[in-house]
Length: 157
Image (tube, rainbow, N blue to C red; front, side):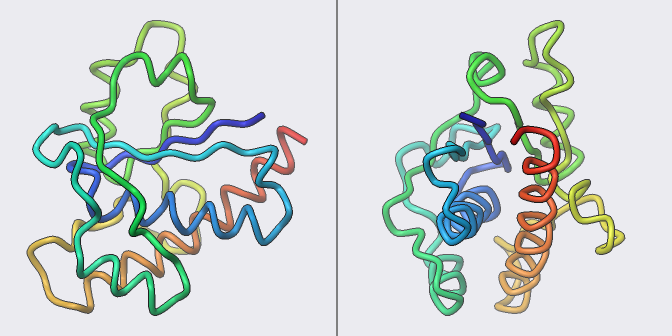
């Protein structure tokens, strides 16, 4: 079993979107029994909350249901449990690096490293923007999800 954790700031926009979209892609490829997927936030403000309603609506228009997901905070223990801890941006990567136990740094990545064609390193936070920001997040997450799945297939199976 390969275990993947997506992490953003509050776990209500970007990381639950990545969880939902990657879960849908993995299921479509018949790999749901081989890849476990979760998401978390570096902050605790939204623990227990559902994803942002605007993000849910945007994802829903693409056939991805986020309604059952609930926010939680990332912990140092996540590095023991997950093979991939994927930060949505550089700040979350730094925050995760600060709690990463020694010897497990190889598990921590920027999510968009799996989508070099985007020429981006950060998935932008759409929370304070308009509808286009949510669509941009979905586009970037979809590209990185496909790249991540290719990587996992090439290196883990």
